[in-house]
Length: 442
Image 1 (cartoon, rainbow, N blue to C red):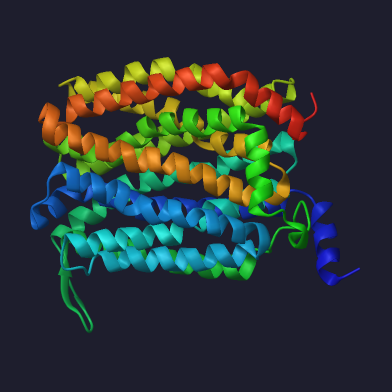
Image 2 (image 1 turned 135 degrees about the vertical axis):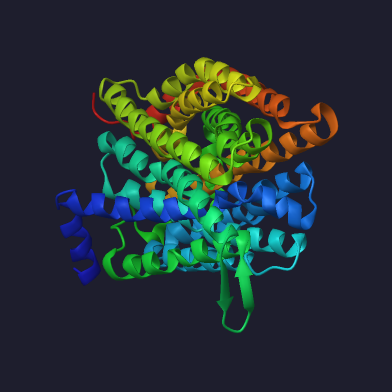
Protein backbone atom coordinates (compact mmCIF):
# COMPACT_ATOMS: atom_id res chain seq x y z
CA UNK A 1 0.00 0.00 0.00
CA UNK A 2 1.36 3.48 -0.87
CA UNK A 3 2.13 6.11 1.74
CA UNK A 4 -0.67 8.31 0.41
CA UNK A 5 -3.13 5.45 0.70
CA UNK A 6 -2.02 4.81 4.26
CA UNK A 7 -2.49 8.49 5.12
CA UNK A 8 -5.96 8.43 3.61
CA UNK A 9 -6.85 5.29 5.50
CA UNK A 10 -5.70 6.76 8.81
CA UNK A 11 -7.68 9.95 8.20
CA UNK A 12 -10.78 8.02 7.20
CA UNK A 13 -10.85 6.30 10.58
CA UNK A 14 -9.66 9.28 12.61
CA UNK A 15 -11.86 11.44 14.89
CA UNK A 16 -13.50 14.43 13.26
CA UNK A 17 -11.52 17.03 15.24
CA UNK A 18 -9.01 17.72 12.48
CA UNK A 19 -11.80 17.72 9.90
CA UNK A 20 -13.53 20.51 11.82
CA UNK A 21 -10.22 22.38 11.99
CA UNK A 22 -10.04 22.17 8.19
CA UNK A 23 -13.63 23.43 7.93
CA UNK A 24 -12.79 26.43 10.13
CA UNK A 25 -9.74 27.24 7.97
CA UNK A 26 -11.86 27.03 4.84
CA UNK A 27 -14.53 29.16 6.49
CA UNK A 28 -11.89 31.83 7.23
CA UNK A 29 -10.82 31.74 3.58
CA UNK A 30 -14.47 32.09 2.51
CA UNK A 31 -14.92 34.92 5.00
CA UNK A 32 -11.96 36.80 3.52
CA UNK A 33 -13.22 36.13 0.00
CA UNK A 34 -16.53 37.73 0.88
CA UNK A 35 -14.83 40.60 2.66
CA UNK A 36 -12.88 41.29 -0.55
CA UNK A 37 -16.00 40.73 -2.65
CA UNK A 38 -18.43 43.08 -0.91
CA UNK A 39 -16.18 45.74 0.65
CA UNK A 40 -16.70 47.79 -2.51
CA UNK A 41 -20.40 48.12 -1.60
CA UNK A 42 -19.48 50.07 1.54
CA UNK A 43 -17.09 52.28 -0.44
CA UNK A 44 -19.46 52.82 -3.35
CA UNK A 45 -20.39 56.42 -2.59
CA UNK A 46 -16.82 57.84 -2.63
CA UNK A 47 -16.03 55.70 -5.70
CA UNK A 48 -19.16 56.97 -7.44
CA UNK A 49 -18.16 60.54 -6.61
CA UNK A 50 -14.57 60.19 -7.82
CA UNK A 51 -15.44 58.46 -11.11
CA UNK A 52 -18.87 60.16 -11.64
CA UNK A 53 -20.78 56.88 -11.97
CA UNK A 54 -24.50 56.07 -12.22
CA UNK A 55 -26.29 53.19 -10.48
CA UNK A 56 -26.04 51.02 -13.61
CA UNK A 57 -22.23 51.28 -13.50
CA UNK A 58 -22.30 50.62 -9.75
CA UNK A 59 -24.37 47.53 -10.49
CA UNK A 60 -21.63 46.38 -12.86
CA UNK A 61 -18.93 46.91 -10.22
CA UNK A 62 -20.70 45.10 -7.40
CA UNK A 63 -22.19 42.49 -9.76
CA UNK A 64 -21.11 41.54 -13.26
CA UNK A 65 -17.60 42.95 -12.93
CA UNK A 66 -16.91 40.27 -10.35
CA UNK A 67 -19.28 37.61 -11.63
CA UNK A 68 -18.15 37.24 -15.24
CA UNK A 69 -14.84 35.45 -14.70
CA UNK A 70 -15.93 33.97 -11.37
CA UNK A 71 -18.61 31.99 -13.16
CA UNK A 72 -16.79 31.23 -16.40
CA UNK A 73 -13.67 29.88 -14.66
CA UNK A 74 -15.60 28.07 -11.93
CA UNK A 75 -16.19 25.04 -14.16
CA UNK A 76 -12.53 24.41 -15.14
CA UNK A 77 -11.49 25.07 -11.55
CA UNK A 78 -14.18 22.60 -10.47
CA UNK A 79 -12.64 20.03 -12.83
CA UNK A 80 -9.25 20.77 -11.29
CA UNK A 81 -10.75 20.22 -7.83
CA UNK A 82 -11.91 16.76 -8.92
CA UNK A 83 -8.46 15.80 -10.20
CA UNK A 84 -5.70 17.79 -8.47
CA UNK A 85 -4.57 18.84 -5.01
CA UNK A 86 -7.43 20.95 -3.69
CA UNK A 87 -5.41 22.57 -0.90
CA UNK A 88 -2.88 23.98 -3.37
CA UNK A 89 -5.66 25.21 -5.67
CA UNK A 90 -7.26 27.11 -2.79
CA UNK A 91 -3.94 28.66 -1.71
CA UNK A 92 -3.16 29.92 -5.22
CA UNK A 93 -6.65 31.40 -5.56
CA UNK A 94 -6.44 33.10 -2.16
CA UNK A 95 -3.15 34.78 -3.07
CA UNK A 96 -4.56 35.84 -6.44
CA UNK A 97 -7.79 37.44 -5.22
CA UNK A 98 -6.02 39.14 -2.29
CA UNK A 99 -3.53 40.83 -4.61
CA UNK A 100 -6.34 41.84 -7.00
CA UNK A 101 -8.27 43.46 -4.12
CA UNK A 102 -5.15 45.32 -3.05
CA UNK A 103 -4.61 46.37 -6.66
CA UNK A 104 -8.12 47.87 -6.77
CA UNK A 105 -6.79 50.71 -4.66
CA UNK A 106 -4.19 51.60 -7.29
CA UNK A 107 -6.32 51.91 -10.44
CA UNK A 108 -6.74 55.11 -12.43
CA UNK A 109 -10.41 54.88 -13.43
CA UNK A 110 -13.62 52.87 -13.81
CA UNK A 111 -12.15 50.51 -16.43
CA UNK A 112 -9.19 49.60 -14.21
CA UNK A 113 -11.44 49.00 -11.22
CA UNK A 114 -13.73 46.79 -13.32
CA UNK A 115 -10.68 44.77 -14.41
CA UNK A 116 -9.51 44.31 -10.80
CA UNK A 117 -13.00 43.14 -9.86
CA UNK A 118 -12.79 40.56 -12.65
CA UNK A 119 -9.43 39.33 -11.31
CA UNK A 120 -10.91 39.02 -7.82
CA UNK A 121 -13.51 36.77 -9.44
CA UNK A 122 -10.81 34.67 -11.11
CA UNK A 123 -9.12 33.98 -7.77
CA UNK A 124 -12.31 33.32 -5.83
CA UNK A 125 -13.54 30.87 -8.47
CA UNK A 126 -11.03 28.36 -7.10
CA UNK A 127 -12.41 28.27 -3.57
CA UNK A 128 -15.89 26.81 -3.22
CA UNK A 129 -15.66 23.87 -5.67
CA UNK A 130 -12.42 22.70 -4.00
CA UNK A 131 -13.53 23.50 -0.44
CA UNK A 132 -16.94 21.84 -0.68
CA UNK A 133 -15.49 18.74 -2.34
CA UNK A 134 -12.94 18.57 0.50
CA UNK A 135 -15.63 18.89 3.19
CA UNK A 136 -17.84 16.26 1.55
CA UNK A 137 -14.90 13.82 1.58
CA UNK A 138 -14.25 14.43 5.28
CA UNK A 139 -17.75 14.06 6.77
CA UNK A 140 -20.48 11.40 6.69
CA UNK A 141 -23.84 12.45 5.17
CA UNK A 142 -25.57 12.88 8.55
CA UNK A 143 -22.97 15.47 9.62
CA UNK A 144 -22.45 17.09 6.24
CA UNK A 145 -25.16 19.76 6.52
CA UNK A 146 -23.74 21.29 9.70
CA UNK A 147 -20.13 21.07 8.45
CA UNK A 148 -21.03 22.84 5.21
CA UNK A 149 -23.02 25.40 7.19
CA UNK A 150 -19.89 26.24 9.20
CA UNK A 151 -18.04 26.81 5.94
CA UNK A 152 -20.94 28.74 4.42
CA UNK A 153 -21.11 31.02 7.47
CA UNK A 154 -18.02 32.62 5.95
CA UNK A 155 -20.43 34.45 3.62
CA UNK A 156 -22.25 36.24 6.41
CA UNK A 157 -19.23 36.60 8.68
CA UNK A 158 -17.25 38.01 5.76
CA UNK A 159 -20.12 40.28 4.83
CA UNK A 160 -20.48 41.38 8.45
CA UNK A 161 -16.74 41.97 8.70
CA UNK A 162 -16.83 43.92 5.44
CA UNK A 163 -19.52 46.17 6.88
CA UNK A 164 -18.27 46.54 10.47
CA UNK A 165 -14.50 46.50 9.99
CA UNK A 166 -14.85 48.02 6.52
CA UNK A 167 -16.87 50.91 7.94
CA UNK A 168 -14.15 51.68 10.48
CA UNK A 169 -11.40 51.33 7.88
CA UNK A 170 -13.30 53.54 5.43
CA UNK A 171 -13.68 56.28 8.05
CA UNK A 172 -10.03 55.96 9.13
CA UNK A 173 -8.79 55.88 5.55
CA UNK A 174 -10.82 58.99 4.69
CA UNK A 175 -8.76 60.89 7.27
CA UNK A 176 -5.41 59.17 6.68
CA UNK A 177 -2.76 59.43 3.99
CA UNK A 178 -0.06 56.77 3.60
CA UNK A 179 3.05 57.00 1.44
CA UNK A 180 3.39 53.76 -0.54
CA UNK A 181 7.04 53.24 -1.61
CA UNK A 182 7.35 53.31 -5.38
CA UNK A 183 3.76 54.57 -5.79
CA UNK A 184 3.12 57.70 -3.75
CA UNK A 185 0.36 58.92 -1.47
CA UNK A 186 -2.76 56.82 -0.95
CA UNK A 187 -5.89 57.59 1.09
CA UNK A 188 -9.66 57.09 1.28
CA UNK A 189 -11.30 54.13 -0.41
CA UNK A 190 -8.05 53.31 -2.21
CA UNK A 191 -6.16 52.82 1.03
CA UNK A 192 -9.01 50.70 2.43
CA UNK A 193 -8.88 48.38 -0.60
CA UNK A 194 -5.10 47.98 -0.36
CA UNK A 195 -5.09 47.14 3.35
CA UNK A 196 -7.99 44.68 3.19
CA UNK A 197 -6.49 42.89 0.18
CA UNK A 198 -3.24 42.19 1.99
CA UNK A 199 -5.08 40.39 4.84
CA UNK A 200 -5.33 37.19 2.78
CA UNK A 201 -1.59 36.52 2.50
CA UNK A 202 -0.99 35.31 6.09
CA UNK A 203 -3.98 32.93 5.85
CA UNK A 204 -2.57 31.49 2.61
CA UNK A 205 0.59 30.56 4.53
CA UNK A 206 -1.42 28.90 7.32
CA UNK A 207 -3.41 26.84 4.79
CA UNK A 208 -0.27 25.77 2.98
CA UNK A 209 1.54 24.62 6.13
CA UNK A 210 -1.24 23.08 8.27
CA UNK A 211 -3.98 21.75 5.95
CA UNK A 212 -3.61 18.26 4.47
CA UNK A 213 -5.34 17.20 1.27
CA UNK A 214 -8.46 15.15 2.09
CA UNK A 215 -8.67 11.45 1.18
CA UNK A 216 -11.03 11.34 -1.80
CA UNK A 217 -14.32 9.50 -1.96
CA UNK A 218 -13.04 7.99 -5.22
CA UNK A 219 -9.79 7.69 -7.12
CA UNK A 220 -8.67 10.90 -8.84
CA UNK A 221 -7.43 8.68 -11.70
CA UNK A 222 -10.94 7.36 -12.27
CA UNK A 223 -12.79 10.70 -12.35
CA UNK A 224 -15.58 10.54 -14.96
CA UNK A 225 -15.37 12.97 -17.85
CA UNK A 226 -17.57 16.01 -18.28
CA UNK A 227 -19.85 13.96 -20.54
CA UNK A 228 -20.66 11.61 -17.66
CA UNK A 229 -21.44 14.58 -15.39
CA UNK A 230 -23.77 16.10 -17.97
CA UNK A 231 -25.46 12.73 -18.53
CA UNK A 232 -25.98 12.31 -14.78
CA UNK A 233 -27.44 15.81 -14.45
CA UNK A 234 -29.73 15.25 -17.46
CA UNK A 235 -31.03 12.01 -15.94
CA UNK A 236 -32.01 14.04 -12.85
CA UNK A 237 -32.79 17.24 -14.73
CA UNK A 238 -35.90 18.15 -12.73
CA UNK A 239 -33.99 17.98 -9.44
CA UNK A 240 -30.97 19.94 -10.65
CA UNK A 241 -33.14 22.58 -12.37
CA UNK A 242 -35.16 22.99 -9.17
CA UNK A 243 -32.07 23.49 -7.03
CA UNK A 244 -30.13 25.65 -9.48
CA UNK A 245 -32.92 28.03 -10.41
CA UNK A 246 -35.03 27.86 -7.23
CA UNK A 247 -32.10 28.56 -4.97
CA UNK A 248 -30.67 30.98 -7.55
CA UNK A 249 -33.77 33.18 -7.43
CA UNK A 250 -33.67 33.18 -3.62
CA UNK A 251 -30.00 34.21 -3.71
CA UNK A 252 -30.87 37.31 -5.77
CA UNK A 253 -32.79 38.66 -2.78
CA UNK A 254 -30.28 37.38 -0.21
CA UNK A 255 -27.42 39.44 -1.69
CA UNK A 256 -29.30 42.76 -1.73
CA UNK A 257 -28.66 43.85 1.92
CA UNK A 258 -24.90 43.38 1.47
CA UNK A 259 -24.56 44.79 -2.04
CA UNK A 260 -27.06 47.66 -1.93
CA UNK A 261 -27.75 48.11 1.81
CA UNK A 262 -24.94 50.65 2.35
CA UNK A 263 -26.15 52.85 -0.53
CA UNK A 264 -29.75 52.66 0.73
CA UNK A 265 -28.80 53.64 4.30
CA UNK A 266 -26.56 56.46 3.10
CA UNK A 267 -28.98 57.99 0.61
CA UNK A 268 -32.39 57.37 2.17
CA UNK A 269 -31.54 57.45 5.89
CA UNK A 270 -28.52 59.76 6.00
CA UNK A 271 -26.19 57.42 7.89
CA UNK A 272 -22.42 57.93 7.88
CA UNK A 273 -20.06 55.11 6.77
CA UNK A 274 -19.12 54.16 10.35
CA UNK A 275 -22.82 54.01 11.36
CA UNK A 276 -23.67 51.94 8.28
CA UNK A 277 -20.76 49.60 8.98
CA UNK A 278 -21.76 49.06 12.60
CA UNK A 279 -25.42 48.43 11.76
CA UNK A 280 -24.86 46.14 8.79
CA UNK A 281 -21.98 44.41 10.57
CA UNK A 282 -24.43 43.24 13.25
CA UNK A 283 -27.20 42.48 10.75
CA UNK A 284 -25.11 40.54 8.27
CA UNK A 285 -22.55 39.08 10.67
CA UNK A 286 -24.66 38.07 13.68
CA UNK A 287 -28.14 37.57 12.18
CA UNK A 288 -26.68 35.94 9.10
CA UNK A 289 -24.36 33.66 11.08
CA UNK A 290 -27.24 32.50 13.27
CA UNK A 291 -29.36 31.80 10.18
CA UNK A 292 -26.68 29.72 8.43
CA UNK A 293 -25.97 27.54 11.47
CA UNK A 294 -29.67 27.15 12.30
CA UNK A 295 -30.38 26.04 8.74
CA UNK A 296 -27.67 23.38 8.82
CA UNK A 297 -28.64 22.05 12.26
CA UNK A 298 -32.39 21.86 11.52
CA UNK A 299 -31.80 20.33 8.09
CA UNK A 300 -29.57 17.59 9.56
CA UNK A 301 -32.15 16.80 12.22
CA UNK A 302 -34.93 16.50 9.63
CA UNK A 303 -32.68 14.39 7.39
CA UNK A 304 -32.04 11.93 10.25
CA UNK A 305 -35.83 11.49 10.41
CA UNK A 306 -35.81 10.41 6.78
CA UNK A 307 -36.79 13.71 5.14
CA UNK A 308 -34.03 13.60 2.54
CA UNK A 309 -35.09 16.83 0.80
CA UNK A 310 -35.15 18.74 4.08
CA UNK A 311 -33.01 21.61 2.70
CA UNK A 312 -35.57 22.42 0.01
CA UNK A 313 -38.51 22.31 2.44
CA UNK A 314 -36.68 24.47 4.97
CA UNK A 315 -35.83 27.12 2.38
CA UNK A 316 -39.43 27.11 1.14
CA UNK A 317 -40.70 27.84 4.65
CA UNK A 318 -38.51 30.95 4.93
CA UNK A 319 -39.62 32.64 1.71
CA UNK A 320 -42.98 34.29 2.63
CA UNK A 321 -41.82 35.96 5.87
CA UNK A 322 -38.52 36.90 4.21
CA UNK A 323 -40.35 38.61 1.35
CA UNK A 324 -42.55 40.64 3.72
CA UNK A 325 -39.66 41.67 5.99
CA UNK A 326 -37.26 42.76 3.25
CA UNK A 327 -39.76 44.58 1.04
CA UNK A 328 -41.01 46.57 4.04
CA UNK A 329 -37.43 47.32 5.14
CA UNK A 330 -36.62 48.89 1.78
CA UNK A 331 -39.79 50.97 1.55
CA UNK A 332 -40.19 52.39 5.07
CA UNK A 333 -38.79 55.79 6.07
CA UNK A 334 -38.26 54.67 9.68
CA UNK A 335 -34.53 53.92 10.08
CA UNK A 336 -34.99 51.79 13.20
CA UNK A 337 -37.69 49.67 11.56
CA UNK A 338 -35.53 49.29 8.43
CA UNK A 339 -32.63 47.92 10.49
CA UNK A 340 -34.81 45.53 12.52
CA UNK A 341 -36.50 44.14 9.41
CA UNK A 342 -33.16 43.84 7.58
CA UNK A 343 -31.95 41.76 10.54
CA UNK A 344 -34.97 39.48 10.39
CA UNK A 345 -34.81 39.18 6.62
CA UNK A 346 -31.08 38.44 6.72
CA UNK A 347 -31.57 35.70 9.33
CA UNK A 348 -34.24 34.05 7.17
CA UNK A 349 -32.34 34.40 3.88
CA UNK A 350 -29.14 33.06 5.47
CA UNK A 351 -30.83 29.75 6.32
CA UNK A 352 -30.29 28.99 2.65
CA UNK A 353 -26.53 29.57 3.09
CA UNK A 354 -25.22 26.08 3.79
CA UNK A 355 -28.25 24.24 2.44
CA UNK A 356 -27.58 25.03 -1.20
CA UNK A 357 -24.17 23.36 -1.16
CA UNK A 358 -25.47 20.49 0.98
CA UNK A 359 -28.20 19.78 -1.57
CA UNK A 360 -25.77 19.74 -4.50
CA UNK A 361 -23.39 17.42 -2.63
CA UNK A 362 -26.24 15.03 -1.78
CA UNK A 363 -27.37 14.94 -5.41
CA UNK A 364 -23.90 14.28 -6.84
CA UNK A 365 -21.52 11.26 -6.75
CA UNK A 366 -18.19 12.01 -5.04
CA UNK A 367 -15.95 12.10 -8.17
CA UNK A 368 -18.15 14.78 -9.77
CA UNK A 369 -18.79 17.12 -6.84
CA UNK A 370 -16.24 19.80 -7.69
CA UNK A 371 -17.59 20.34 -11.20
CA UNK A 372 -21.24 20.02 -10.16
CA UNK A 373 -20.69 22.70 -7.51
CA UNK A 374 -18.91 24.90 -10.03
CA UNK A 375 -21.84 24.66 -12.45
CA UNK A 376 -24.24 25.42 -9.63
CA UNK A 377 -22.19 28.47 -8.61
CA UNK A 378 -22.11 29.61 -12.24
CA UNK A 379 -25.90 29.69 -12.42
CA UNK A 380 -26.53 31.06 -8.94
CA UNK A 381 -23.83 33.73 -9.01
CA UNK A 382 -24.90 34.96 -12.44
CA UNK A 383 -28.39 35.40 -11.01
CA UNK A 384 -27.56 36.62 -7.50
CA UNK A 385 -24.53 38.84 -8.08
CA UNK A 386 -24.91 39.44 -11.81
CA UNK A 387 -28.53 39.87 -12.85
CA UNK A 388 -29.84 41.07 -9.48
CA UNK A 389 -27.54 44.08 -8.88
CA UNK A 390 -27.69 45.10 -12.55
CA UNK A 391 -31.50 44.95 -12.59
CA UNK A 392 -31.61 47.12 -9.48
CA UNK A 393 -29.29 49.69 -11.05
CA UNK A 394 -31.32 49.80 -14.27
CA UNK A 395 -34.63 50.13 -12.39
CA UNK A 396 -33.18 52.86 -10.19
CA UNK A 397 -31.75 54.85 -13.11
CA UNK A 398 -34.56 54.41 -15.65
CA UNK A 399 -37.84 53.35 -13.97
CA UNK A 400 -38.22 54.33 -10.31
CA UNK A 401 -35.64 57.11 -10.03
CA UNK A 402 -34.30 55.74 -6.74
CA UNK A 403 -33.34 52.67 -4.76
CA UNK A 404 -36.26 51.81 -2.39
CA UNK A 405 -38.82 50.69 -4.98
CA UNK A 406 -36.10 49.05 -7.08
CA UNK A 407 -34.86 46.94 -4.15
CA UNK A 408 -38.37 45.96 -3.07
CA UNK A 409 -39.45 45.02 -6.61
CA UNK A 410 -36.45 42.78 -7.27
CA UNK A 411 -36.83 41.07 -3.86
CA UNK A 412 -40.53 40.35 -4.28
CA UNK A 413 -40.19 39.04 -7.84
CA UNK A 414 -37.15 36.85 -7.10
CA UNK A 415 -38.59 35.32 -3.93
CA UNK A 416 -41.93 34.60 -5.60
CA UNK A 417 -40.16 32.81 -8.45
CA UNK A 418 -38.01 30.89 -5.97
CA UNK A 419 -41.08 29.66 -4.10
CA UNK A 420 -42.85 28.54 -7.27
CA UNK A 421 -39.81 26.63 -8.56
CA UNK A 422 -38.95 24.93 -5.26
CA UNK A 423 -42.55 23.92 -4.54
CA UNK A 424 -42.98 22.44 -8.02
CA UNK A 425 -39.73 20.46 -7.94
CA UNK A 426 -39.45 19.41 -4.28
CA UNK A 427 -40.45 15.77 -4.88
CA UNK A 428 -38.04 15.44 -7.81
CA UNK A 429 -35.20 16.52 -5.50
CA UNK A 430 -36.21 13.88 -2.94
CA UNK A 431 -36.30 11.14 -5.58
CA UNK A 432 -32.89 12.06 -6.95
CA UNK A 433 -31.22 12.20 -3.53
CA UNK A 434 -32.56 8.74 -2.76
CA UNK A 435 -31.33 7.51 -6.14
CA UNK A 436 -27.86 8.92 -5.44
CA UNK A 437 -27.75 6.95 -2.19
CA UNK A 438 -26.42 9.95 -0.28
CA UNK A 439 -29.10 10.26 2.37
CA UNK A 440 -28.17 9.58 6.00
CA UNK A 441 -29.80 6.70 7.86
CA UNK A 442 -33.18 7.49 9.36
